[in-house]
Image (tube, rainbow, N blue to C red; front, side, top):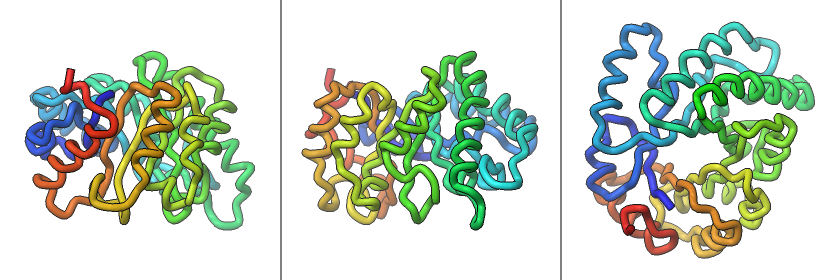
Amino acid sequence: MKIGCCASIENVDVVAAAGFDFLECTVVSLVPENDVDYQNIRKKYFDSHLPVEVCNVFLPGHLKVTGNDVDETAIEIYLSKAIPRVKEIGADTIVFGSGDARSYPENFSKIEAEKQLIRFLKMTTKHAEEHDVTIVIEPLNKKESNIINSVPEAVELAGKVDHPSIRVLADFYHMEEEQEHLHHIADAGSLLGHIHVADSDRLAPGTGTYPYETFTNNLKDINYLLRVSVECEWRNFEEEAVNSYEFLKTYIGSDNDE
């Protein structure tokens, strides 16, 4: 199983020195307002000595996919740039969290918002399939989004889209915030496509009281062998990056051990 770290490309040296197997960067960083600027950004990723295998922050907050202000033309233009660029820098998985973009407005129908999410995800599948990219739906706690707040809800949504490019993510922090049962990880089965981890107060793994043994046992129950990324708040990035990587290795190992 690969252990990665959510960080900007500017921090790749720290991430690599800590021992991580890959970097998880943002999709929005690949779609600057001026397309000419992308060439300079692209070079940074191409020059990276650590692979970028996953991208998060799929959508900018202003690009709404639910509510009354959905602009499907703008969404299509964005997807036609973003997904090919994700593949171009070497990543094959996109995390769809994007709480601001997906949260529906007050007094708007949740049922209609769910239909809009399905429609949006179906829009992504054309590009995802063409570029061999997987979209994983990330459940967010209710402070960050008012829709898709648990792993079972993400699984249900993926089932309604019903496309092999759409899978789900389990985030330890969001699950703990929602007091979600960790067996939901195993319940997701083959739909589980990525994992995010942190610890108490969203700090670095190993610094708090999250039940890592139970968490990782659920991964082992379904023979999950894909990737795990640290997504947390750092107090001392260089020191904690090393410690969190070593901590996670004790539970799940790393491709660097082979």
